[in-house]
Image (cartoon, rainbow, N blue to C red):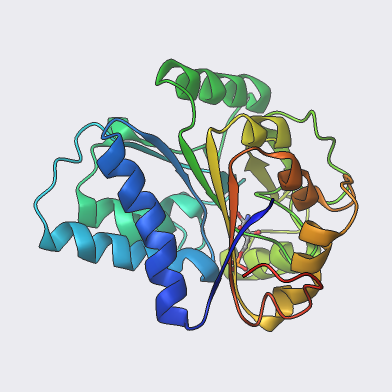
Length: 247
Ligand code: GLP
């Protein structure tokens, strides 16, 4: 039985998504929680920040990390995941640097850096909760269509549209590679709990393929059908092409 929640309003969507993170922290204050960036998760981060500013809560033990990062841009660039997460959530919660783990935007040795990142997550007890956005082409993090299910954290490519936008915004010359560095699909599947969030009509076709289509590397998000504890949190627009009744 797939676990699917369909929010009727944007407020309900953001509140539900935020409650998954808040609930995880309350249940296990030393949780390791992976966050995604983008339009879908912006408001939920603000809801979490508001919640913890209202209620005194010890957040010293929680570790947050980013699912992915843009390569070869300054970390301070407004579209870098590091800066987005800092601005949307991490600074407000006053999370110590040692408890906010990000893949780097620059490295001399990406394979080594990625391996070290995975080891750090392992040494903190492994991933308790992972919040994942959904790409319109079915990507998870920067795992584009065709990514093997066995993939681990690594440097990879981003989709063409996003690459164009970031290149323009950062004035990156065309001879500099602009890629993504991302948790792999195998790493994602090792998380104890996953919440996939998707909202908007532009995601509806991919939501249907992800949930009701074949499990295939052509649709990386379809692998989540196999995860024993993955919840799919949608709004009514994103859910509009689903054939089955889920609620
Ligand atoms: C980017 C990020 C993903 C994110 C996705 C969804 O590609 N690399 O981690 O989940 O966008 O973004 P949005 O919520 O803006 O649709």
